Image 1: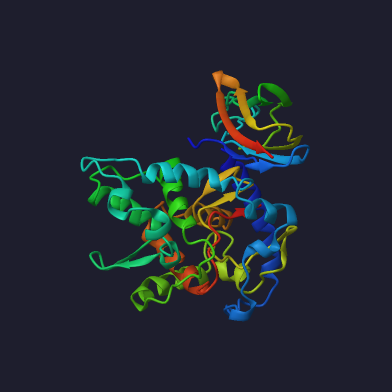
Image 2: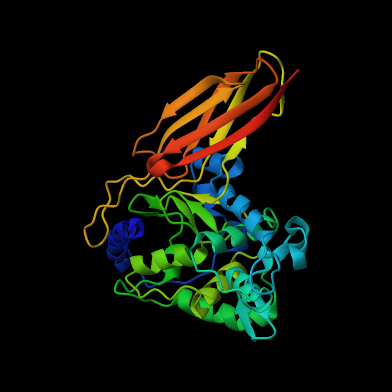
Length: 266
Length: 106
């Protein structure tokens, strides 16, 4: 319900954006030069930055703690915990989130971190998959993500190219009733204001992250859903190949930027 | 759900002013919101927070519906002696959580 209220607000903002962008020349869809790439962290107030930087003030750490407990908890018919196979996450999961979405040989497709955790659950632990945007999956994903904090994103795997291209196509395509492309805000007009809020470059460096507007932690897919609803486009279902493709594209676009998980955003 | 996050310095000099930070996971449902079918969502908030230092109360707060989810409470105290600082949160629907931290005063 909170999301519903926010979506209406976002929709109003985007309507204003549509009117504003309608007057602009067609999207140049120029990608952001590497030297100009910056995390939305840099757009935040000093207070919000301090909240992210200080572990005892960062609410995302509550999910990290929860994820640590889940990592060591046995589950499923196999009665094994994540730790039974992967040992201690600070070593085994270091840098893993920086490489996701990753190419899955068996399926021949890109798989995101949440998808990988659920594949591990169904195939190794013989347990039912965890529900999207619920405590357990978010906690485990955040805990794994936390182990890559400060490490640069590595999205160079060429096998991800098809997913990246699909993601790029979605990102640059005009869609929804407002007929907007993601790139119009996040490539062409980043740094400008949308109804008082600075438009970020949309780099997925801190997910899952704690959003003050949500009053909780959420995944990149939830954030993408927010933007799509704001554009009055039909959002994809959680876990869909389209979201994974968009994430693969955004990670390639943010290649080399450091992971901030769990980030805090306004 | 996760246990609370507590930050208390492990050691402090006698008489030193130390900062204590606490963060607890709670939805803080205000009671003013309605579902899409118009039903009121019942209030569910943390209403009280108490910190004691070796049994002596050093900080107390009463919380109301305007407090954001996952309340972050920080305060200062004077490190007087080694011991335990205990934290207790209470709230609607019988909610209660406890946590403690040790401090060594040198």
